[in-house]
Image 1 (cartoon, helix red, strand yellow):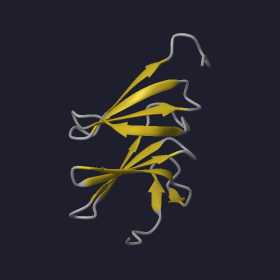
Image 2: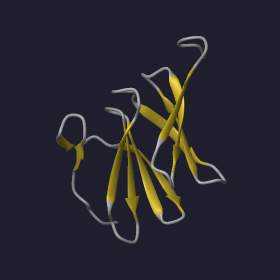
Image 3: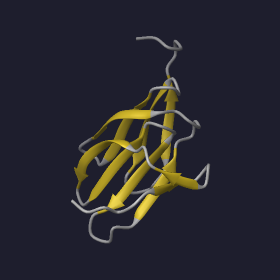
Image 4: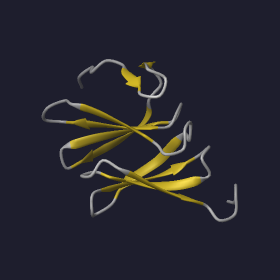
Length: 104
């Protein structure tokens, strides 16, 4: 393990200390879902470059992510009432609201 320090939330422009739900690596990158806000953090394992992708819905509280066989990161937006996919190559997030709000 290596401490890469605190990341800055791009919306609030301050250090973020509450990143949770680390995912395993997909190819060479690691992903973190920022449950305390609404960001996806990608860490390149080779260069250690950090990319912070804001979710389309602010403070969506992303969690329970998985990387599929095509390299897309899928996750639920706990507070955003949606599910999303993050293109691991294109660095963009697509979001789908659930048809019945807050349904189980």
